[in-house]
Image (cartoon, rainbow, N blue to C red; front, side, top):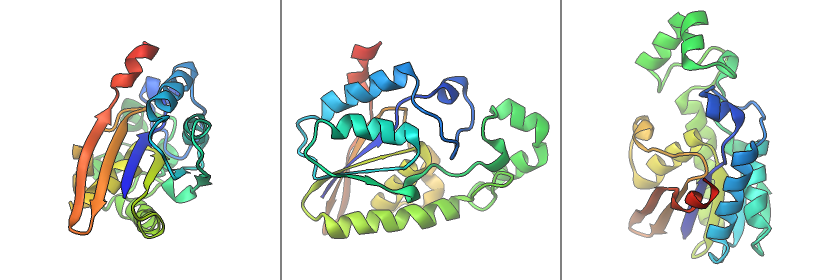
Amino acid sequence: MRLLMVRHGITDWNAQGRYQGQSNLPLNSEGRKQAEALARRLSQEGISAVYTSDLQRATQTAQAIAEKQAAPLVFEPRLREIHFGRWEGLTHDEIGRCDPVALAEWERDFPRAAPTGGETLAQLTGRVEPVLKDIREKYMDKTILLVSHAGPMQVLLCLALGLPVEKFWQFQVAPASLSEIAFYPAGAILNLLNDIHYLEETA
């Protein structure tokens, strides 16, 4: 199975460096252009199904791509970004001023600590791992597109490649980027990571 993974296009909060989490922001004008560029890039890929987070920045990206595909669009809440709780809408500096103790603990032990009112890395992993299992069982030898967010995509990369999820931060996943993993009986191969060259036409 080929798994194509796309991070949603950019939003205003992405551009401002704000923690977005499960806040339901739309794409901004640049993000909509990025989604269209992705749709053109993927138009010849022969995708069998498009799985997307149900947050609108992801669904808007997925819908732009799916319009050029003869593939069903599957809305999957388990592919949402990690929940940042009270930190959503704030920058790192703002969090440092209003919630310094929790931020220090999260940065010291991010696999187990959670943002105030939010999720841990273990909780994120617990909901995205079954999605990968379901897709692999249902679509053997097919090409599937998954549209999600940085956190879930980084975790999925670790799970696919047999790495501890604590290493998820070592994968850079930019807005509107494309990555690809091929699954074989002996294991998975990372064919593409964080490709954004097709976005040059939107600049």
